[in-house]
Amino acid sequence: MDAAKVQAALSALGQPKFRWDQVRQAVFERAVSSYDEIAVLPAQTRRALSEKLPLMSARERRVDASGDGRARKALLDLADGRVVETVLLRPSETRWTACISSQVGCAVACTFCATGLMGLARSLTPEEITDQVLFWRQYMAKKALPGRLDNVVYMGMGEPFACYEQVSASLKMLLDQKQFGIGARHISVSTSGVAPKIAQFGRDFPQVNLAISLHAATDELRSRLVPMNKAYNLAALARSLKEYIGSTKRKIFFEYVLLKGENDRPQDADALARWLDGVGPKELLHVNLIVFNQTDTPHKPTDERDARAFQQRVLAGGYKSTVRQNLGRDIDGACGQLVVLEKAQ
Image 1 (cartoon, rainbow, N blue to C red):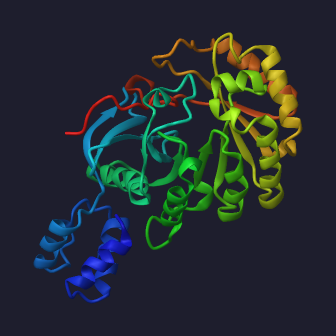
Image 2 (cartoon, one colour; image 1 turned 180 degrees about the vertical axis):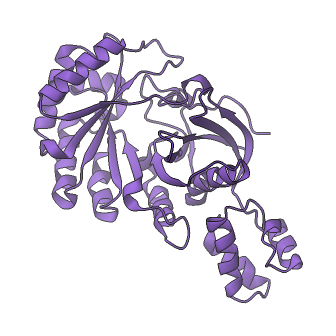
């Protein structure tokens, strides 16, 4: 929902200003999914809004649920015929997290990521980005799922800092206490390393979490796995992260997908610790290790034993490290698995 467009539409219909508050409360606090559910609006106004301005910029095509019930993946049709995926995760009994996309496809083309195989179709609008969160809140209300969706990660399809203007506008909407009202520290934005935007992000959103999709700590290996490194190498990335830490004093999370025999060896763990030594204080750097989720690429997942051995070497280097849960694998909704091969209906 685009708040400004709805307010303009209400004004054009001759409605008093308080009507927007009625719509806002219904949509953002009660998670209604249509104007018809907002009974306090005059029937004629509900009909006019439905005809002139859809409440959502995306329409549900399908929702798949994982066998354990801890992940759901939605395929959403956009107004121009494009299709995007978004994921709802339940890491614990009381927490719900929306993993949202910022683009249809991705131009970064990390060699192990299914989204990168698509290439880039276009960036999403701020409304299309935030409507993924709105969609999941509506879904939870319809399904009577307990709890509240209050955690958002920009870790779906696309590179958020390649469309910084749209992502920035969407963050302001999510943070707005009169709209989504999500706390800054409950939002994380992940980038593959668009170095010039990192310091700006720190200035614009100092309380929003920053995650770096790293995956290798030598330029030769990272340039092969993450082509973004050819534009902004590890030295440039380190400089931007130092500036970010200097201005925010906030923790940075590093995402590291473990690929069997490629970046999961003891020397790779040692290289990672050495590179982190040049970034900032140990207490502000956290490494999230992700066992590769199989995609249509030649890469293979690291063995659990090797993943734990890698973690131990990182810990021995003085850095906090977690082997992250991979939720949604059975519905292709885990890290690196989002890809749209279907056409819009």
